[in-house]
Length: 400
Image (tube, rainbow, N blue to C red):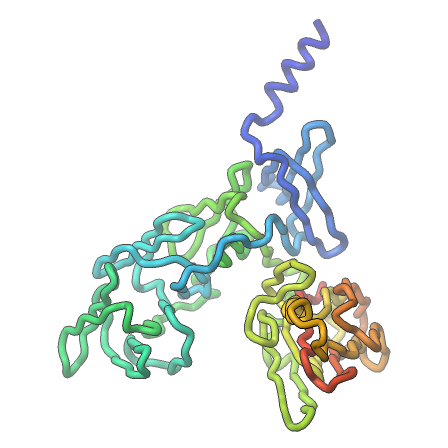
């Protein structure tokens, strides 16, 4: 009888909605946890995530220590059309319809979403340079022409714009490279929803800024600045959840006056560092893992950061971008991909890899920076000058 009661209580307690024993990596400020769970929830009162596997005791993970939750890496190809929103969220998909006030955006991961035109920053079909500080909305054509005016509607393959001299003009999407909307008084900090901020990275590479309302077996429910109702990010559509916390800051998010970048060219060729991208402008990928924050550099590049003794630890994963390995796999006679990597804390050499090549796996760094004024991240020339020396300081962050 006692056994029967125990089993009955277990069945009643154990959640029926399951997430198929998903495996998550919890990257934290002090450790990394690999969690195999078929139940997950958020304890809002204590701000912790509770995970449970059927035959194993539950784990309590404090949200303030979480840097990132990593699930399945992206598997859905990016759609041809990119939507950039006022809060810097990016969605991939396409426009199916529109009104004078909004567009209907179809996303391969989120379905149909209605978004007001006032929330839009850019609609991009083809990446081209655009002017800044526009006074009016602007259409950029694939042939290089531009047309300024007031966007009246967007939808069904056509944008309608009111030009001060030409009047009402209708233009087809197929002729456009991008639409840039006049910057409104959209202050990201002012419009931020109060709460636990995250960036949700989806399987199609879309990323969404929002604040957590709930975490359940169904997924992560967030409130965004561009949709009036709560938005559910299902677990099977999520690649990563990046937490925004006062406990740490990514070096790519530092104010520009706190760092500077020094280049030493080889044969007068300089490769500018790329923020939150690899040096070639693509995704930061190390050992098949995507990173959404960091710096992509080429030799010889120094990133010099003013810490002013305000931080405890420096953490990152450093290595040659996977694109270099892919190039070598196609051509084993390829030269390059040979660098000297150093981390300096003031005058102390805290990490040194004299010859880092495509045969080296990425290195996880966790360096004590207490009482350090200046942190220097150096990628120096190895053999073969700067050829294929594309290094990522991936997920580089400072722990307070």
